[in-house]
View (tube, rainbow, N blue to C red):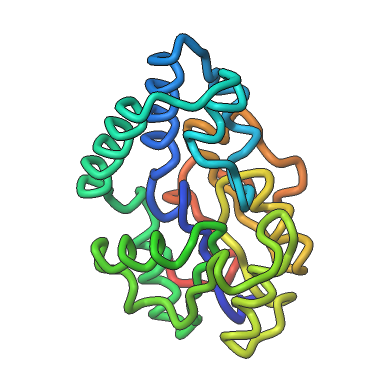
Length: 216
């Protein structure tokens, strides 16, 4: 059955923001003589209201982070922000949805000031009828609020929607909202695959168009 809407997560799903953020954090931790294993970092992927890098370092170090290290981390992030590209397969799913007149939305745990400028720079923002971020809801993922808000903004029943996610916490949010969830883990979230995904893919190039009544 063709979905009434497709709702994308942003970080790690539309663009690979999560690996560069981890690399910056890992380097900042190491500059303080600390470690940040990938297996630890992945536990926070997809959650709302994660602590900032200075807060994480202070918690681990027992004292304030070095301001010079934090500024260097900020400069690194600004650099890769400009090099961010759309993940493989995203454009094809968007095109298929457009051809089938299926509306699109974004439901992200990140703030609007992060999500919308990146969607605009990637040339994708005009495809999304609704963009719902942490700024729009009382509870972020894994609570269902973001996906319910996106469905409400589109005027559709969440039960008929397909969510596209990359993380266990994001999948839990979409499923709690009643949506069918397609999960495409990235090189971080592959360490914490969800067990309740309706469809689990290695790449969005494998999106099951026929299953969802979309032109492939």
